Length: 243
Image: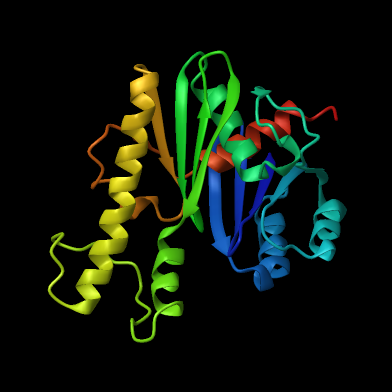
């Protein structure tokens, strides 16, 4: 059994895989890490190795806790990956994007794959059919856009994400929802269409914590997979098991 720990900008995700099948997943805040790790270790005593991918802040004591319980692999820019990295600054490539690109190579071999991860930021990552990671784009995520409107204006309120019924906002609140949510969906459809101009046979994966807001509003055909990053991390754990 494998334990996957994905440390994001705001939350920590735990996942347990058995024979490459996801059998348990939970999300917690950083401060609950010790409690949740202890609970998972008790519930799944046959976990023997783990991987941690760290994007956000993560105390070193938590890494040490993992090392005491399991054979731990810490994903880094030096890790083995199943693609050729064409990024001109490979050391700055986020480990989340590394895991997503690895999942694309593993699950969609010999395909042109665009992975769209809708989280704190929206990342676009492209792997071509020859397993070349070519790069992509980074733009503000949904929550970040709501916060920016509130922070950098005098009177606009801070709202929680909500899918508007129509593009025509008839109040300040519905106008903000329209601007953010339709703006994001139009952006994503536009990016997909631009990629399709160069790559006719394109597989598109939509993932991330806020992907559910957009799954039904996009005009392009996509594969929605909320566990794509976790599957990539699990694959990289096996891929690097002798390292």
